[in-house]
Image (cartoon, rainbow, N blue to C red; front, side, top):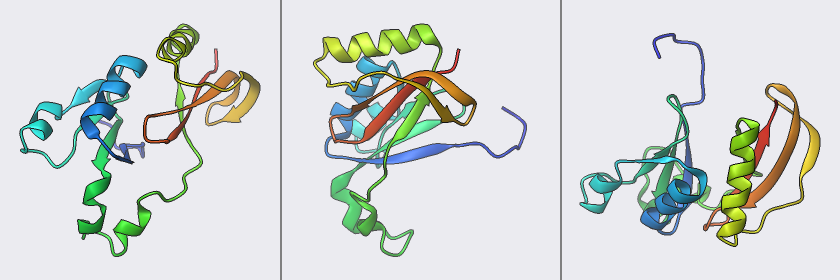
Length: 142
């Protein structure tokens, strides 16, 4: 991507076990792990998973919270209440994700209809949690 319009680059999630979290995001949500091998070898402070060409989710070990120095009070953000992160996807991927979550016994909410978001009214959506309790919404607009 070469244009410099404002975009969402990454979201940092506090997780207990970054390797297990990366596995969940890869196998359940179909996201590609980034720097997982480097993290496992001690060469990277955390792994990530790729949402799309422009956006990643960083899987920050909760154990590092007290050592964060880049922002005053960073350790206080561990467990800070974020309502949810929303993933918009095509309708077929929406169905596939719901099926994968159910196959892995991940609880999912009922489907909601016609909820407002960045692209207008989403046709359907549902919610689920990752292994660390982070809440995600999956939706599609088509």
